[in-house]
Length: 127
View 1: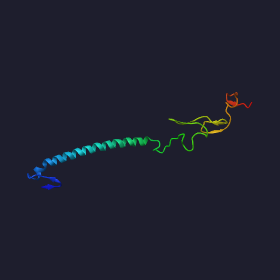
View 2 (view 1 turned 60 degrees about the vertical axis):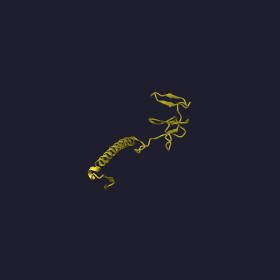
View 3 (view 1 turned 45 degrees about the vertical axis):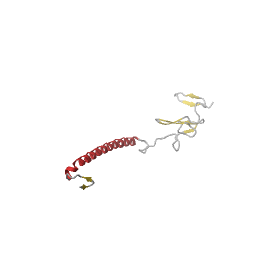
View 4 (view 1 turned 90 degrees about the vertical axis):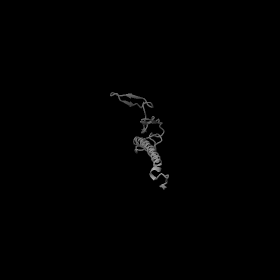
């Protein structure tokens, strides 16, 4: 007798198929347990990836400035260095003053002698 792909012996459909059904059910249970393990591993991986994406500056739309940014963060001709804290710009070129990001025409005390006034502020001396 054949039922749904299972061959049973002449002992009857229930008695002859019992061992085969038990074996098939045990294999199915084993496969389901393996699939459950795989699903749990995927859940763990997805959770880890989600955390990485939530902590990612580029993924959150926050773009971290770098020396390769366009426009460049430092004044033209100023050395640029990428650090953990962000971009660090060097000194303004000769004839300019500023922080390296913004440089305006001017003269520093290194280029022209300076003196301290009564209030302790440094003033340019054009001697």
